Amino acid sequence: MWGEPRRISGGPALRERLAKRVDAHKYAHGHALVLAGGLGRTGAARLAARGALRVGAGLVTVAAPPEAMAECAAQLTSVMLRQVEGGEGLVDVLKDRRVTALCLGPGLGCDATTRDLAARALATGRAAVLDADALGAFEEDVEGLFSRLHPRVVLTPHGGEFARLFPDLVADGATAPDLPLALRVGLVRAAARRAGAVVALKGPETFIAAPDGRCMVHDAALARRAPWLATAGAGDVLAGMIAGLMARGFDPIDASADAVWLHVEAARHVGPGLIAEDLPEALPAVFRALGL
Figure 1: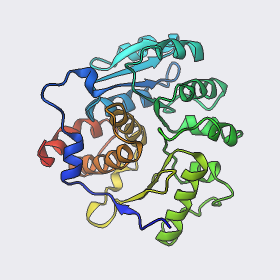
Figure 2 (figure 1 turned 180 degrees about the vertical axis):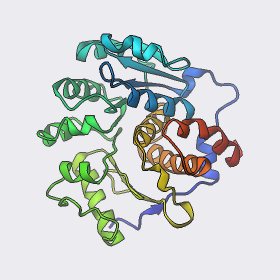
Figure 3 (figure 1 turned 180 degrees about the horizontal axis):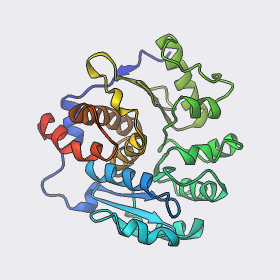
Figure 4 (figure 1 turned 90 degrees about the vertical axis):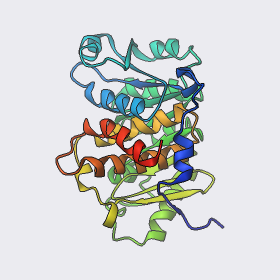
């Protein structure tokens, strides 16, 4: 029988995981690849990439289609840029085994191209975060998505996306915070078991479960409330942070839990008026407060 979920908090274990070796080079801390959408839709991927870089990935690359290269180049400096045209282009990039984690979904579009990119990425067995459009693109073929997943994948749905991925587990709106804790924990555990991947159900209380039954809960209420996280792009930053930690070698459930805690802590550091771009830039102060 599965035990009670663990409450996510900062502390020595988090500090130990986040610490970097003084003798390591950049590739020792992983290389995260973030896929971008087309012209005019690259902002979400750039936010995710910044989150991955600030959380400690040694290198981060945005992979963009040809028509979006100039838009990305005008906005990226320490984040690298690589032209990728369709699924075959992604396969070519992933021949480089130094790419250790991927982030797919922010701004990609809910279409066949996204499904193809996701399928090819998942086929490599690399650690991957599927967020936003990478989930929406499979709304009519959920079983097709699940058949491709593996335990090194993290799905990051909000309540509506969760209901569309797991309609028989929960009806629309049934993930509302007035449901008993045990019921919500059970739903997310069942979802992770079915998907065969880590599921991070986002909200004021974020529930994270692995296929093996491990479950964690983060409560961004009361003393840790951060209502200003309800802003465009905040979820894209979180997806990038999870990918950045997985690029560094974190277990997917630890990467998800640590990223959620850091995400809220960064928001609390900035305070009211926060916009998504502020979140990665607040992380150095959060790390200093942890004693890193």
